Image (cartoon, rainbow, N blue to C red; front, side):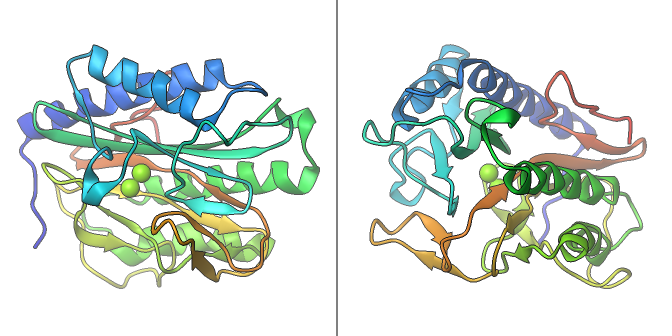
Length: 260
Ligand code: MG
Ligand code: MG
């Protein structure tokens, strides 16, 4: 069942989104070789709890941390650790969620440690194109469009460049719960699927692999990595369907919240 939100609730969700955006901005600013993924987790947790809010992921089905940090060939749900020390050229996917006033915000970035010059064109392009696919999907989050329009827009970018599109993990509705209906796949057929309406709030989150789509779950019960060991990128925003078009609730200050 899809739980639509009132205008007032969407505005409350925008406050959660803004806090998640602020945490990501701090992480982007802080990221450098030598930091551990647990260091990143502490930065995010300090910002979220310092604002009187609650991390969405900590304790979710027993997840132990504020962030999911997934490095290189890991796709999603990596557990922050003092033992995972970032090196120049690493790819780090950082997923962050926060609860403000009862509502969740959820957003992910994939960053290159040491900046674009620290990696290969192949990895740089994977990161940029996965981010581009996210925005192509967000543009489709409009009343009267179908869920298939969102998935098809995301998938088209991957097809164009031959990336594997992860199928086992998808976007989702979001609100008072971190994961609500509907599922929002990163693939689909334009014009198919449920029709979006005002008050829907969903997380769009493409996960693209340099190699095949297939995934593998590690023994820790959380970390998802590519089955073939090739690298992966993940970008995510929480977005509301409004009469003014898509409202990207987790947009950072260098990104458009409305101008799509
Ligand atoms: Mg997320
Ligand atoms: Mg999500």
